[in-house]
Length: 368
Image 1: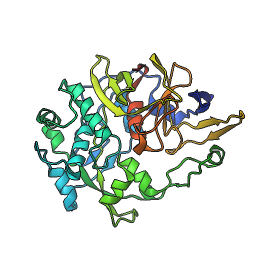
Image 2: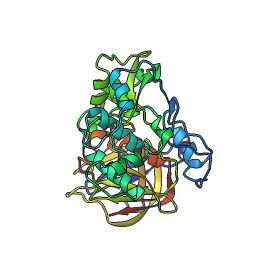
Image 3: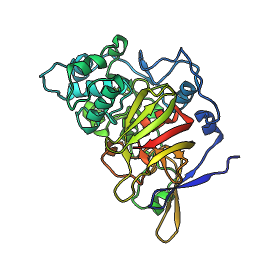
Image 4: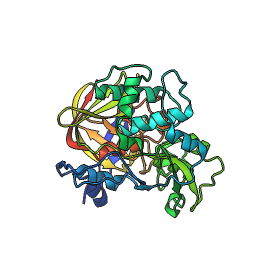
């Protein structure tokens, strides 16, 4: 029986209590070395997203951590059809349709933009620049022809639809939900830090902002059997990650393989003025799916907040050799890169899951 451990987070005296069940141990393969396989396929899909092929440890782990999404392109609304067929042209204004297409292409090329919202903002620009860096292109503030050509040179990838139809199942809508109170003591009394609504859960499942999900489905009741329009997440990076660099200036986490190739990037929040992140190089020491979280007040009293997507550290904790610090998820994906953290590296829950499935047990974590 695994004995839970505790890690405090930053100067605020917040503690993550690390819970590891037998089922989690099977999911994360923390004691296994990452095997390579030439049969691993990413990120092209054909009616199914996030169902990876291959027999490597990273593929096995990702398939257990991520939901398989079966979609259709039948009877799509006109806007969805426009997004799917859109093509960038120099000098033409980047509207919401084109922004959605660009965000998808960046995601599919392993340069995460955070939640898909159809707006070309800070995180989208950072993702483009990370993509340019990975491809050895000139880093620019605006999209150019060279970058567009690099984004679209994979014909199989370009045949993948951005917006798709998804039929809601009973499991999608019949779930535990709760109202999240403000105080730590009140949160500790909950059975779980569940989603507050079905639409919040669906937005996270499809890597979208909840507002954009509702914009695309203005008449949706989000009931079982209903077909809604959603973003097609594609497949995540499957290459084992040996090193990550948390860049405070760009608020981006860069992920490198064993040959030091930049293979993925994620928007992140790294520390704050009050609780800065550490400096230097550290190692991954523990990987936990669905951690709980212990808050220690100024009086020393502790409140243990249960696991769940709205837990203060989301659904992932990757603890570092630097005591009290780690990489973790977030209950508020829309605020990634727009909020402070308690010295840790904060990602969206889905990016944190993708990293959890690929980062090696002894990977290097650098703060830049």
